[in-house]
Image (cartoon, rainbow, N blue to C red; front, side):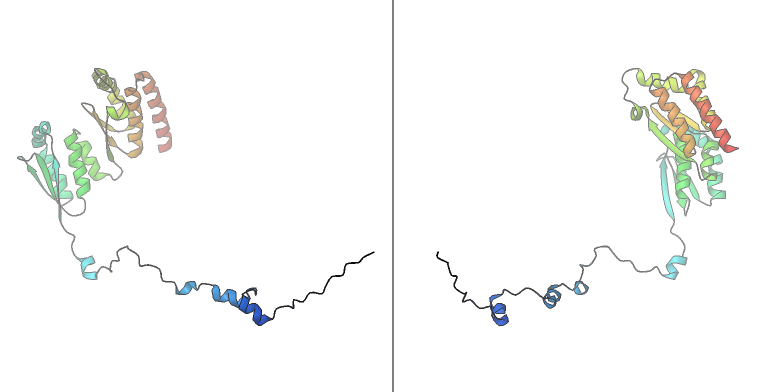
Length: 240
């Protein structure tokens, strides 16, 4: 029986210095700390947003700059504007302290003043669209009134004789349907060709618009009346 004898290994373990020269030593904790990036020294790129300095006390306390607005008036409303001019002139000049003039050549109303120009412009625009002076003045007295305008084609595209029929369904016989929607939703409605203008609060405008959209889409007036009665009763209960 032959027994194989293994020769003893002649390779000796490498010294620490030799391992460092060969690069076979495992990284230590000191080496990890040396490889870590110091984020405190990293500089971020400058922001591209502009920086504004503080407003001086003299500029903040100084008078506001006067502005001018010009509101165009349709030709068919110029005659009525001349008749109602004194009723419109008083609230704008006496109550709000604005300078107002009617430019007949340019067919416009020019307003000059500070602060409430947008509200006054909405008042004149509402009158130019066809609203009565007393209804338009409510825009000056109340803060929660708005003016909403849309067209029939925004609801549904109609061709031929269908747009006039849709206007007829909204107006009703002798304006009955239009008056019913106005009384139930507490709004004021103007029908100008295929454009519809609604004046009222935000919630009331939504009620009136929903009824008008239903009529444009072909709903019967009786069905719309029933929906308006339900909505108006809920509005009365909320008001109590």
